[in-house]
Image (tube, rainbow, N blue to C red; front, side):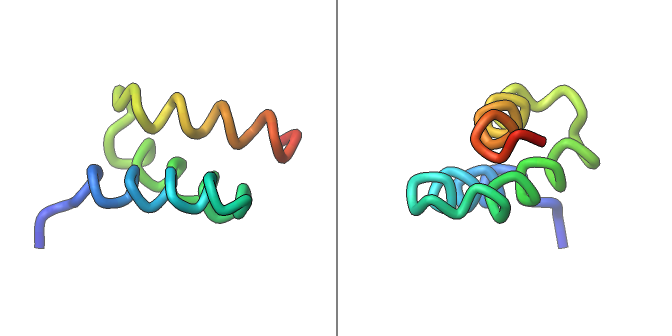
Length: 54
């Protein structure tokens, strides 16, 4: 099964909008483990890190 970074990013965005910052952060970090240059994942990780202070 191919890696679906787009799906995880979408899930991360949804979790963020629902105030589930920890979940969103975990999802964005998962993408970055497999695609370190993914700019969307970096954006959501940074936004979540700011909200969770991690």
